[in-house]
Amino acid sequence: MSQTPQSSPPARRSVLRGTVAASAALALPAVGAAPALALSGRPRAAWGVQTGDVTATSGLLWVRSDRPARMIVETSATGSFRRARRWHGPLLGPGTDFTGTTALRGLPAGRQVHYRVTLADPDDDRRTGEAVYGTFRTAPANRRRGVRFLWSGDIAGQGWGINPDIGGYRAYEEIRRLDPDFFLCSGDTVYADGPLVPSVTLPDGRVWRNVVTQEKSKVAETLDEYRGNFRYNLLDENVRRFNAQVPTIVQWDDHEVRNNWYPGQILDDARYTEKDVDVLARRSMRAFAEYFPVSTLSASGHGTEGRMHRVVRHGPLLDVFVLDMRTYRDANSPNRRADEGEGILGAAQLAWLKRELDRSNAVWKVIAADMPLGLVVPDGSANFEAVAQGDPGAPLGRELQIAELLRHIKHRRITGTVWLTADVHYTSAQHYAPERAAFKDFAPFWEFVSGPLAAGGFPANALDGTFGPDRVFVRAPQRANVSPMESPQYFGEVDIDGDSGELTVRLRAEGGTVLFAKTLQPGRVGQ
Image (cartoon, rainbow, N blue to C red; front, side, top):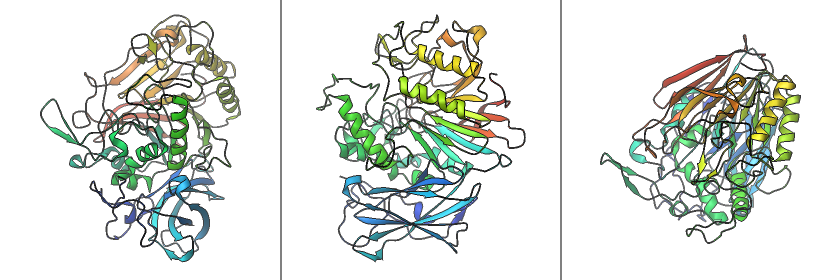
């Protein structure tokens, strides 16, 4: 059973540094809503719109139809859509689950862009559905305006899905109201391996209620089940309203496929009939490309490079280096081999990252990692899931590849690197310094962790001393899998001042509280 969000009556557009149409703020549907493939009426874009990988002059615009349709886009400098520019998008059909993306190029830098998407009957372009509206800001051409973005990850995990009793995914609305230039989603965008049940009784006796769909009632194995997992979060009106205003930069981690997966893995899990993780990963990647606007991916598999890692350039102040710490990693193991093997990035991605860091002229270079560096993340009793393995001595296993990268950053005098991640379901700040480390050939740097955005909270992980981390701040639950009704969700904010170039990181808790803040100075190799 698929669900289609139900449209609310048209309302006046609200303004928050730009126009967001009320058609994007759709009501949360009840289970049993009309099927997505209704055969009568005009095409509907009831799943909202979203933009991704926005730069100074370009961006990607996404929509989903409820039937075959042609995607038509108009952009304008104002919400009145006078002198609108028209873009002819793709034909949306079953081959991409009726989703499609239109590339917008030649946009004005540092400006608010208003857009509307209309879906037309492919056999009669006069037969169109109701337009859906959105807005975004392009990156600035100069540094004066500054840059501000937020990040987090981990959505619909550990059995905590969309709960209408608490207003759904409330953190999305809080982030939207902060009106950032963009949002960095640091992986675990869905929990394809995490089925939902209608209700869960909490330790204090309260009851958590989930919206449940057919695809979310079992682990995802088929392409349609993966599609249903990505579609699930769009049932939440907070997400659709957020998507219509805030561009995203999205990466994946493990739960888009299956917990702690790695290439070549064969599952020993009775829930799965398909045991080959490589098969599952291909299906998930295709669904991911269909449901997120990513510049290096394509739902059709044509016209892009077909990879998750990329650089998104956001004006002279900021380049975002989006890593893929899943696709090229070696198998999870005790992680103590004396040679690096494929490590966690793979040889080709590591070479790419070093080249792109060398080429970057941005003041700040944010390395968006879907897993932390110095936090020990176990996989069972003997193996490890991330970079660290708890041995505080010289680099071993996956640490060798990170040591090579950190050495490269120091010796090439690459300034302004900051690491952002999620994954561990709490928020913290770690400062890495060679004087505390077993491996000393690197410049000091910061790693900031935030999340979950809509999932269970977990206690803080142990630190590995190889790169000398000092946990300057941490906020985490005391027990595992604390529900969003019991503990706040977390997200981080990065604010780069256009005049001074200073970068300030704020770790935030849902509800408006700033838990921790740190300001970094520009132009330094390490700090």
